[in-house]
Length: 206
Image 1 (cartoon, rainbow, N blue to C red):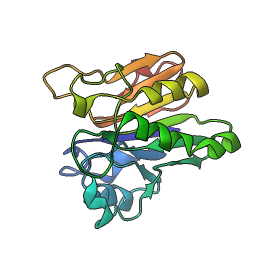
Image 2: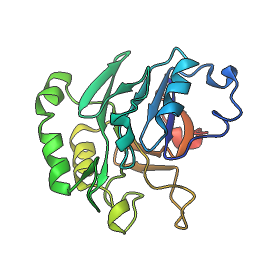
Image 3: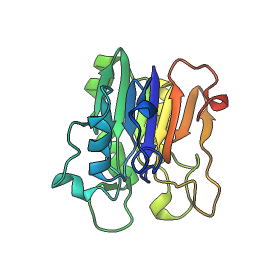
C-alpha cells in the first residue's frame, strides 16, 4: 500500500502545479493537520484513494469549512484494507483555542479509546499532529510532544507513527524519518510518500 502523507504546508507541487498523474499509484492519503480544507478537498477530487485527516492546532476553520470528500479519523481507529489507523490530532495547549490539549487531556482521549483498541487488537499506524515527547519535537511548549504517544508505541508496537507540527523549514533541523523501538516515525511536513509494506522505509521515503 503506497501512502501519501501531508501536513502543515500545502505542496505547490501538488496544488499549484498539479497533474493527475502525480497521484497515480497512491492508495491512501493521510493528512496530519494544519492544511487548508480546500487543499484536502482538491486532492480528494482527483483521486479514488481515501483522504484521511486529523486536526492540527490551526484547524479551527474545519468546523465551518470541513474538507469535502475527506474522512476525519480523530479519536477513532479507521480500518482500510485491513490496516488499522488511529487518529489523535491537536497539539500541546499553549493558549486558548481548539485542538489543543494538556498531557492529561491527551491521556483522557487515549483512555476513551480503550474499547476500540481492545476490539481492533491495537493499530498499525498512529496518526497525530504533534510529535511524541523528545522524539523530533521542540523544547518550546507549542511544539513539545506528548508522552502518551510514546506509551502507545511501547504498548501496541504500530508499524508507523505519522505526525506533523514541527516544520522541516524551522531553524532547528527536524528529521523526516526516525525510529522508536519497532515503530517507523515519519514527519509528514508538506508531503512524503512511503510504502506500508517497506521493511526499511527510511531508505526509500520520497
